[in-house]
Figure 1 (cartoon, helix red, strand yellow):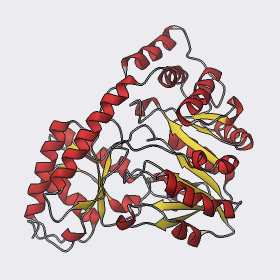
Figure 2 (cartoon, helix red, strand yellow; figure 1 turned 45 degrees about the vertical axis):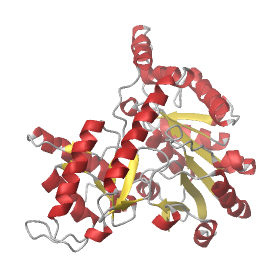
Figure 3 (spheres, one colour; figure 1 turned 90 degrees about the vertical axis):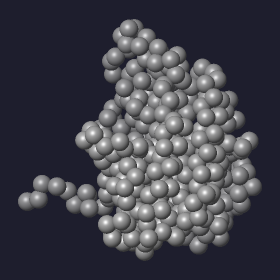
Length: 400
């Protein structure tokens, strides 16, 4: 009897995690690797948040908590949505998990049956399709184009709708493209969604505070309140507060779904780490003055890399309006050969080439369901980005 389950065949390991791990291993071997593959801020968690975690330990808040979050954190989340988004929720509409990924997993474990379909625009965050598959659903990809700024249109959305469509995922600002849906664009999509009352919306808002060029954030519920009962919103403290390792994500939605997710969580992780929950209360309730400086630095880095890429004819991109990623086309480099005569057949080959010849770790577009592209994160110091850009330019010049 095979020890491993058939379930494992439904999905692949996270390629972003795999590449980041490979970069760390090469660094340990003495190679000067610049990793632009990881999706986490390079800034430290703000001191007042760290202090609250230490304070929680000193006060003895180290025991089990309610399965899906302490009351004070749920209230802080309710207050956050009222203040930041103008949306009203109650504590019993809130769930807290071990990171946003865990909340998404709980959501789909609680709501998907075998024939249920989840519409996922590509390029997509690497884990969406695999979580859907793991939870027994069917991922249905809506392809987008650079010419449409990697956004779905009402027409492309409606063409993918079937009687089995249960969820649509909207991720804005987006990982990996950094695109942001405007109020007008969300309104047009909502017109389609109102026609099909069996479709629920997962709004992944994890990058909502990281915006550039006076871009405004809108949730689809802000645009069309009639979709409130059918929308589940995911967020967390990882990106805006540089708390990726603290593993606190949260979601808000229909009370019935929240209860089901708590049931799932009670038989897996139980509660998120107690001290991290208390630190998250401080993160959400305190002023975010530090974030203005972070966004300024992200914007400066984005502009530097974009200006540099403008000088490399064989690479192209859509300038991001949010998050901290650039999704770069390497199509013009396909079929060229490396100095050791290897042919660049796809974005995986090109990403491996950059790692081998330029000591830069990037993520190939195939991980995000769209090729031939590669994603870089500019959540790295300006000094490192300047070196990485020079290495990339030199490496590209070696391809013949």
